[in-house]
Structure formats: C-alpha cells, structure tokens
Image (cartoon, rainbow, N blue to C red; front, side, top):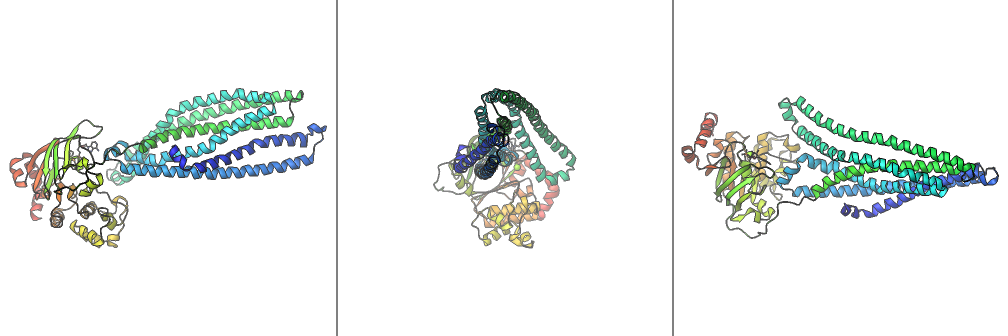
Length: 581
Ligand SMILES: Nc1ncnc2c1ncn2[C@@H]1O[C@H](COP(=O)(O)OP(=O)(O)O)[C@@H](O)[C@H]1O
Ligand SMILES: [Mg+2]
C-alpha cells in the first residue's frame, strides 16, 4: 500500500500537520477555561475577587483558538480526502489494468461478481481506511496521550487515575475487536455472493421472467441478503455492547476524579477550575477512545478488503508471451498434436489425445453433442486456455511460443455467446480492426449478411447498440459478431456455433459470400446442424473427448453411425429446408 501512499505523501503529511494543529487547540482550551474560572470568576489568587479583564482577554484568546482549530480541522479534511480519493483512484486503475491481463482461467477463478465487488466496494473500504488512518490515528493518539499528559500536569493524582483506567479500557476494546475480526472476512464474502447474484439476476432478468422464476429468485436473493444482514448485525451487536461498557468505565473514572478533586480542593492541592479542566480532559480521552474503536473497526474491515484487492494486484498474468517473432512460411495451418485438456481446478479431462491437422484455406466443421468439448477445442487455438498436455501449432509454431498479440492477430474468433458493447454498430464492427474504413466495415457487414438490417435502422451504422446488444435480435447480434471477425481479414476464422440463430437461407448466403471474400482463410465452424456443416471440406465428429470420425459429408454418412443418426434426426425438418436453400 506504501507504493500508493507514497505518491500522495505530501497531501497526507499536510493533513497530519493540520490535524496536529486542530488537536493542540482542543488540548489548550480546557486550561484556558480553567484560568477563566479560577482567576476571572472565582479570583482564587485575588482573595475571591473576580477580574473581568481576565475573562475578556482569555475569552477572546479562546475564540481565536477555536477558530484556528476549526480552520485546521477543515484543511485536514480537505487533504485527507485528496490523499484518500487519489490513492483509491490509483488502486482502481491498477486493478482494472490487471484484470485486463487476466487469462480465461483467472477470470473463471475470481468470478465476475467478485471482481466487481473488489474493484468497487473493497477499494472504497481501503480508501476509507486510508482516510481514517490519516485523520483518525493521529487525532486519536494525540488526543489520548495529550489528555493524559495534561491531566498529569494539572495534578499527579488525576493523571494516575486515568492511567490506571486506560489499560482496562483498551483491553476491553481489544477483546471485542478480536471477536469481530473473523466476521469482517465473512461479511466481505457474503457481499460477494449478493453482488454476484444481483449481477446475474439483473442481467438475466428477461430469462427469469420467461421461466417465471421471479419468486424463487426473490427467495434466493433474500436468503443471501439475510445472511449478510445477520453477520452485519453480529458485528453491530458486539460494538453495541462494547460502547456502553467503555462509557460506564469512563463515568466511573470521572466520579473518582470528582471525589479525589474535592479532597484536593479542601487541602489546597487543586482549584475548582483545574477540576473542570480535568473533567474536560477525561471527556476528551473518552472521545479519543471511542474514536479508536471506530477506527479499529474500519481498519479491520479495510485490511480485509485490502487483502482481497491485493489478490487482484498480485495475480501475475499466467499466460506468458513466447519469444517467437519471425515470419511463418505458411499462413493459417493448425495442428493439434496429442492434445489433452482438463479445465484448471477440475479433474475430468474434456479432451483426450486429439491429433488433427487443418490446412491453410480449408473449411473444417466440428460437430458433436452439447458439452462434448467443441468450444473447449477451439478455445485452445487462440490460447484462451492452455493445453494440459500435447501441443497446438499454428503454421508449425507452438501457440505458446508466439507473442499473444501476434497469435491473436492471426485469428478472428466469433465466440459462442455474442457480446456487443454500448457503442454504435459501426464501432462494434471495427473492434475487429480499429483502423477499418467505413467501406471495409460495410463490406464486412455485407459478407455477414448484416448490411440489410443495418441499413433499415434509422441511423444505419451510427445506430447505438444498447447494453450487451439488448436492442438486437439473437441472429442480428450473431451477424454483427461475424462482421467484427470478418473485417479483421485474419488467417484463421473460428465460428463457435455462431450462425445457430440464422435461418438456413441466410446462413447459406453468409458462408457463400465468406468463401468469396476470404477464400484463403482457414475456417473452423462449430455447428449443430447438418445443413451448416455439409458444405465443409471436412467434418470432425467429437465424442467422449476424442475425434470419433473425420471426413466429408458423404464419407461420414457411409462410415459414421453417430453422424448418420444426427443426419436422420434432422432430415425431417432441416433436410428439406436445406435442399431448398
Ligand atoms: N470454464 C469452464 N470451467 C470448467 N469446466 C468447463 C468450463 N467450460 C466448459 N466446461 C465443461 O467442459 C465440457 C465441455 O464444454 P464445451 O467445450 O463448452 O462444450 P460444447 O461447446 O461442445 O457444448 C462441459 O462438460 C463443460 O461443463
Ligand atoms: Mg460450445
């Protein structure tokens, strides 16, 4: 954390200096007050005759001190927030940068909800912690030790009384904090769960409605929320019991001081004014201790949050760039050499011993039941995940040896789930190639069969896409995602179930024009429909983590029972439609 604090250290130091000013003013006041009472009102050294001049002079002094103290307090606040907010801002930016470097397995490990909680709520806690630390720590300690010091200065007995009470009070606080500390970690985890659910349910609210899951989701959310509240209440209860105990202790101290003070006045060891000052110092000490409790509470929470933020900041990017920076001879050849793959953190292999070569310019379709590993297979090519054993080669070079930017520059993937951003349609397409001209964007849209519906919108390519593409149909989103890949003009195109929402006619037109515009690109098409895959140069059927069959449509119909089964199950509806297409 020092790394961040260091950058804004001048603000923190200024804040601390103003704090010292503020507290000094607080500490000087009671002694002036005591002089006003003793010399001005009671005339202790003047045979019991008060002095109006002393009251006025000291009164004015006191007002000036209060004003100066107030000014110092305000300035302290300004600088505290300047350091706290800026430090929070830096941490947030660093976290975001770090998250952007995360690999797919790292994103799986943290989970989106938790990442969002960490970057928002946890960083706010850390920010509060820093502000509290700069403001509270200095104020509390100065106030506490200053009060004790001045108590000794007034009268040794008063000093000894508060000094004896001090360890008892601190011990009482430490006990409560030790009880509350584990609850803070729990609190943050539960907040994670609530945030994840909130995010999932709000972004998936349409599905909740469609499945009439409102009530059960309400109950599920309610339960998570209740648990959060329960923990929060446990923390509050601990502190609710602690505060009166500490207050009671302090009142006992005050009573003792009054009693001892009365005796001291009787034998001339103290004046009424000094007793007044002693009581004020005791109150200030109490104030300091109460603040310390709050402070420790926030510090405990802040430290738990800081640990969670640190987990992001200290997560090294686990995909290391390779050193290969030469030119490859062929462009677009893909080889799987004895590839096996298990998702990190699981123990069931998804792919086992896959051997496969896909040549430049070839169109290869991948089929198989849902969950058989099609997405997992194609995700190994751009290194979204790394193979568990074996190797994936592009143009004869292991994908791990490329620099990631070079590797991903060769590949244009269309993911199974179309994701668009809240920008214009044209901007969304140009994500594939930021330098694309409007002609290139339009050409890609034409290939992706998207130009027609884009032209029909009021603002064409300048039409804003709503968050996550909500304003578009599934098929429209898929076509925009395809246009985004096509505009890149990459050596390898990967379509992961990317045309499933298109009608067969549009789909056929899309693949025809793709073949015309990108004849040299290697194309991998994951699909479920025979109509989609039958035109491919080769069809690969995945089953039980391995390649069950590989060949053209006609070959597979003859040799592969699984493929024939799929064909027969679809021929009724798709088959006829397909013939027409
Ligand atoms: N991120 C992940 N972490 C753990 N397991 C996963 C992950 N993604 C997919 N799986 C599992 O891997 C298997 C293959 O999934 P996938 O490749 O998406 O199948 P397909 O694309 O063929 O429908 C499934 O059993 C799925 O549960
Ligand atoms: Mg899939």
